[in-house]
Image (cartoon, rainbow, N blue to C red; front, top):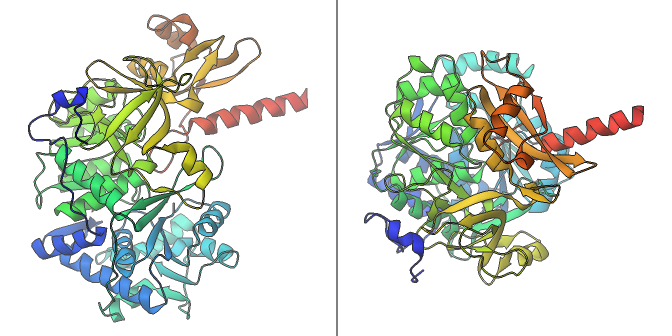
Length: 566
């Protein structure tokens, strides 16, 4: 992008407006890093460590296996794993073999798994042993030809590898025994017996797909987002420039964000592989475990989501841990409350800034400057080579400064389109611009703000109410640990504002009237929640995004049952 935009005046000298990208397949970066830093630790997993040379060697074995089983260029390989060494090795091994990765959430139930496998046409799947029964149950209804099965114990150090089966039996109530056959393969056997010989495949980084990443499916069936090698590599290279104080070959990143989510995949996995950062892999988020890990492993970078930071800040033993190693965090997937930002920075002495992106944009398009100007409540400014504008919903023209409209973005990280869904592709991609579905505005300095998703906006009594604004106020209350706001049907106002809240420990006596008084002192009357529901927890995605729609659906079901009883 050569045209100057108003946000460019805030770019520090260290961040270029445009980048000369290395146009090569994603897996080529692993090969380069393993050559430059062969003995540097690439992965730390529950006490086990692998060097970059180890990761490359094992990725080549996966590529060799897949090709020997008949994988052709463009075939889809589903990866159904939590954060563990196998998830990184499988990803890069698939790309080396010429395949397209289909990231599959390990929490998927059979119905969701069957849909994704069929929609993507995946012919291979690499899964955890405890998930094998789920895969087996849908296998005959899909195009799967081969299943590769691995287990957490495969990469545990002695004696954890001996103890783990007992932990697994306790947690899952069973031990899954997998019998290798012609179409079911054991990971450990592959790594022990396979050589690294595979046939390198010619890849056009700009044209060939590296990934089918499925959207959350909040508006119907999930859609397969087609991301090329260049899309993903470009976003990493932008991220590297944004984090300009980070040093290749020296940083350590905490990998709590799941790699089956595009944010964790880019901000942790691909970034680390590209620039020789050490990854600390954590299969799931547990606040206590994360605090212990930070103190022991001393990560310098910690990409996350607001609920992750909230969980740490509200841990009863927070003060016992030293979090001072953390220097930089970019928060994504949901709005970052200002109160959470300031508290976390106080605890760590590091920088925590809000960013923004979508699956369709690999994912990051905007962020506040980690070391530079930032604006509380803003998602920041567009990244290098990324253009953005706000579109007036009525006229279709570009909105004026401060006017709320739909945010559209353009840049090298924007997807090719949706897999087998040209109609939806044409709806959101127009003249190179991706229409995000998010409502927001830009201020006179070029900083962008998200009002909310179009579908989440509440219209009560003719007024437009953006949940984020109400949530920001709720987070300012000392008793609130988590809060989410949604519109629910109201016979008089059309919709009314409802707040779902989780209280901090020690604040059980806080009542609805207390929160009402607090909100009325800070919000226009029409924005104040009319209903409060106190909960022990809020439903979340694997990356920690609160599922607002799930709460609304729960309310609808409850009201339906009440109506039937009457």
